[in-house]
Length: 276
Length: 285
Image (cartoon, rainbow over all chains, first blue to last red):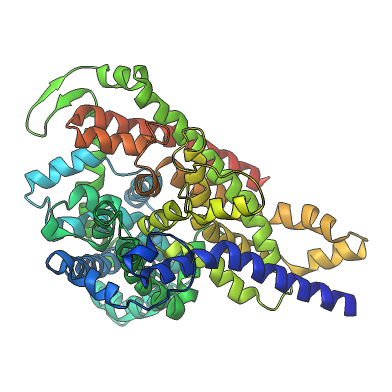
C-alpha cells in the first residue's frame, strides 16, 4: 500500500513537470512578452519583464483606428447570430430527424452528414454569395458559419433527442398541443443541457475561425479578431510585445469560457465519438 | 398519433435551405468549375487541364504528398500519445483533473495565436527550442527555415494543440469500460501492462476509431496553422492542398484553385470514407 502511494506521488510530480514544460511554458512565454518593451520582447526570452508595460494592451486595442475593437465587435456579432440561428434550426431538424424514420429523413441525414467530413468548396461559395449580394457582409458570414456548423450541431441534437421519451409528446398530442407549441414548450426546455454544449462549442469554433473569414469576409472594415491577429503578424514583425499582447487579448475570452464551461466543452468534444 | 403531422417536414426546411445554398450547391458546382478557366463571371471549359496542370507542376503536386504526410503523422501520433496520456490521466493520481485541463486548453486557443507563438519559440537564433538544445550541447535547428524540417515542425505544433481533444475522447472511452473486466484480469494474474494491452486497448477501440477519423480528416483539411507558421514555405516545402487552393485563388487562377478544392474532396472521400467503414466493421466483430 505504501509503495503504491509513493508511486502515485511520483506520478503526480512527473505529470506536473511534463505538463509545465510542454503545455504551460508557451503560455508563460506569450504573457511575459506581452508586457515587455519592444526591445526586450524581440529577444524572445522567457524572463520576467524588468518593467511591466501594460500600455502594450491599450496600444494594440487603439492601433489603426481601433481596428481590434471593431474586430471584436464583428467577431462577437457573427458568433452571437450564428449560434442563435444554429440553436433554432438545428434543434428543429435534430428533433424531427430522430423521431421520424422514413425516406425523406434518411436522405436528409445522409446529405447533412457529408458536411461532417467534406470541407467547403470555397470559390463556388464566393460566387453564390456574390450573386445573392451577401459577399463581404456580416450576414453572409453568419450564413456560412451556420451552414458549416449545421452537420455537427444536428448530430448533437439528434443524439440527445434519443434520450427523451416519446411518451411526453404522445401526452401532449392527446392534450391537443399543436406541433409548434409542443416543440417550444415541451421539447426545447428538455434540450437545455445539449443546447449549452451547442452554444459553447460553436462559440469557440466560430470565434476562432480564421479560414472562412479570410475567404468570405475580406476588407478592413469587416475585420474579425483572427484576421487582425494574422495581419498584425506581418505588420508587427519587429514588435513582438504588441503581437503577444494581441495573442493574449484573443486568448482571454477562451480562458474565461473554459473556466466556467469546462464540462460542456468536454461533453461536446466527446459527443458522438464514444458509444456506450 | 400521426407522425408526419407532428414531426412536420417543415421543421427541417430552415437547416436544409441554409445548408443547401451555402454548402451543397457550391460543392456540386465546384465539380463543374474545376473543369474550367473561370473569373466568377465568365467561364471557358478546358476539360481536365487544371488537374493535369496540378499534377505536372511539382510545386502543386508536392502539396498532395505533404497533405498525406501531415494527415498520417498528426493522426497517428495523436492516436498513440493521447492513448498513453489518457491512461495516465485515468489512473489514481491526485492532480488528474488539473492536468486534464492543462492538456485540453490549447485546443481552445486560436490556431493563429498558436502558430505565432510556436514560430517565435522555433526562431533559429533566439527561440527557446534552440536555446534548450544548445544548452545540452547540440547544435540548433532551423525549425521553420529548413525545407526538410519545416513540415515536421508544423506537425509537432499541430499535435501539441490537438492532442487534448484526442485525450478527452480516450478518457471518455476508458471511463466507460466496466471495472469488472479489470478485476477479472487481476484475479487471473494479469499485471498492469497485460491489463492495458488485453483489456484497455480492445475495449477502447470505438474511442480510438473516432480519434483516428477525426484527426485524419482534420489533417487532410489543414490550412490555418501552416498559413500562420510558414505560409507554405520555405519554397513549397510545407504547401498542403488547402494552402495551394488559397494561393491560386489569390493569384487569380480560380479554375485551378477549384480543382485543388476538388482534389481535397477526392482525397477525403477515398481515404476517410473507406477507412471509417473498415474501422466500424472491425468494431462490430
